[in-house]
Image (tube, rainbow, N blue to C red):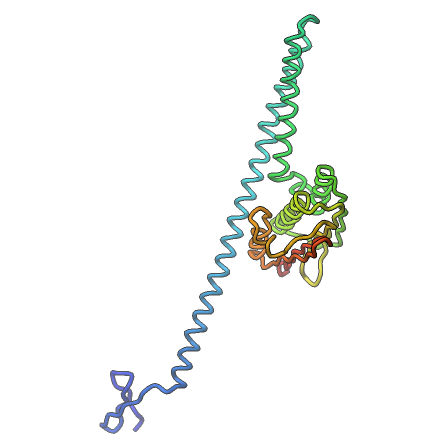
Amino acid sequence: MSPLRCATDSTVRCHGTTTCRWPTPMDDLAALRQQYQALLDRLQRNEREFRRLGRAVWRVQEDERRRLARELHDGVGQNLTAIKHRLAAIANTLPQDANNVQAALDAAIALCSDTLEDTRQLSRLLRPPVLDDLGLEAALRWLARTQGEASGLDIAVEIGPLPALDTDLQTLLFRVAQEALNNIARHAQARSVLLRLVERAGKVQLQVADDGRGCEPEAAMRSGGSGLGGMRERLRLYDGTLDMHSTPGAGTRLRAVVPLPAG
């Protein structure tokens, strides 16, 4: 007759007799392995959900940037342009001897022009239209040109053949390049910069190297003013990495690597 387990886990009934059977070390080990695997599976599911939510939040932020940029350009910018033209029309109707009024109108027109340029610049910083209209390569070349003109940096751009990149990945790489160039302009005291974007073994690599004074990489990553720590966390949402190599007096090289989506 085969043994029958009784109501409690620790006893076995056989031929009318009752004997105790305690779990063996192998039973405990198997149970621990099962619990560990269940915990690991749960952590992996939570990590995937966290990254999905993080990407969704960032996508909403970029959509809001896009909306604000369009409102600044199409709303505020157009109103300022209309005010400028009306002031100029009024100035043209003034008699020649109205010098005081003419000077006031000229000052108002100049203020409108400056505010209009500031509004357009803010709109481009929030979300440059070229990124949505022409894609990442054109946006990076525009960024290098405008940053170079504003800061006096000599920025060279090298872009190799790339597969089609989705909107999120293009935005991510553009933001990394934008943050890197802003930091170089503010802190590096550099003369020249190389911005390179290539594809290697199923991954997109963005490198930004300068010939400036260098820095301490870990301190720069931790600094809230640099924005690099936030970019590293954002890259992690897409399974990417951000590395910095620098030597005092010998420049800095920043490299972002993001795997391409399967298929």
